[in-house]
Length: 233
Length: 296
Image (cartoon, rainbow over all chains, first blue to last red; front, side, top):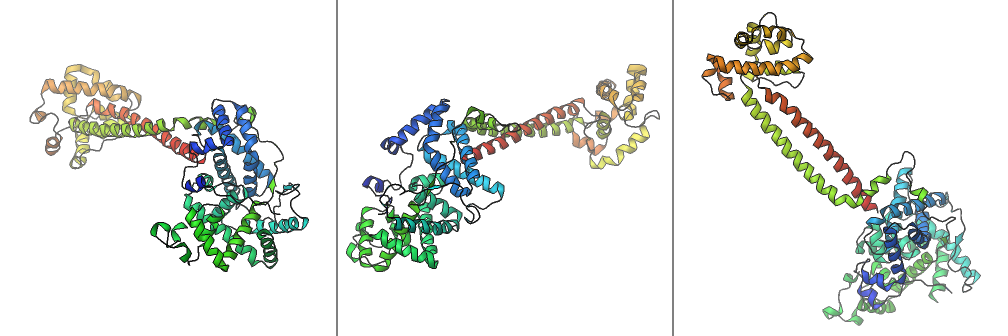
């Protein structure tokens, strides 16, 4: 019924808990990372076409991170475009490794710069600034979810977005990167510049706080209980 | 965290005897598969027998699943970079700055080198200045002479400050006045000796205006005075060693200003200012580049 994307640990993954996120072994294991690396090398030689291929591969995730930080479509578009222009300008100093955390680091820094410049708090209330574009639900069109559970999830997501907006900035960024964008701990550590242990503790505190916020609200608590029972089956 | 577990297999702990509740961080890490095998087993065994921890774990899992399934948003347009976007906008000339990024290590080294060079030049300036002061204490108030040159003022020694203006007033010819008089009328004895050597050339110089002509004529006149002084062997100067400032101050003889100390400081000072400006630019550039590199 529910599409589970909780990571399944492998023995190699567990053994590399404290490993280097940009280690060559990791890149060699991942064909997508190998292709990214090839495109980056071409971009470093001045191939704008190769860089734009890289843009196409990563623009969705960069845009979504910017959108959740900026809470405004136009501002997120500007931040995303700035991210790729800055990435092109700095591609010469890219020292290898995974491209996605490198791009997301530029993106988050750019978003915080823009928010600071505009004097706005990141991720303000969703009431005031609803997204102007249609969301794409992960289970839409897959035919593996009942209408009831989809409605339940959609309703709960509104409460969850509110709960997310109330999180401290550092916890919100970590939980967004981990549980919404699917980054692993090492990537998050690289993006945020925090230690791996800090990432783990921020993530657990963020999840516990989100759970508590949902439970504290009467309506959301009831919906959450129903969802928990469904997801447990 | 894994460290929160008191009895690990390595310590000979019994997994089935584990009774401490794992904290939220451990439960959260277990959802992400970030526990070692023995930790995972320990948590699983504890959760199987503890309803509170089981509930907490299922709620955390439900929260993560909900977050996983939050909607994504498709961008309305592509963000591919065009050459037009890479050109700096009018008034925005920061693009060049990023090109300096690869040169950051070299700029750091240059900053240190320039700082050291500036220190060396400053030290040299101080030394030359001091030597210049010592060797120049032989004739008239240097402050007046330098004022006439339109450059810096050298303060006379404290015990001479009161005496020298008086001497200048008493001894100066009546034709000399203002700053132009400083060069010509500083030492009547020497003037007279110079007059004997060079006839009436002294008068036009004394009457020359203080501004531009003074700059050109005073160093030459001082050199002539020095030559005259050596030739005529003025009695007041004979009892003293040539460059001894302390003895000169103690006995209070008339002083002269050598030409070199008045000319060199400007070169030193210009070098120091130039190096200082270069150092400032380097510091600002390196700081900016470091900030840029952190962000990218």
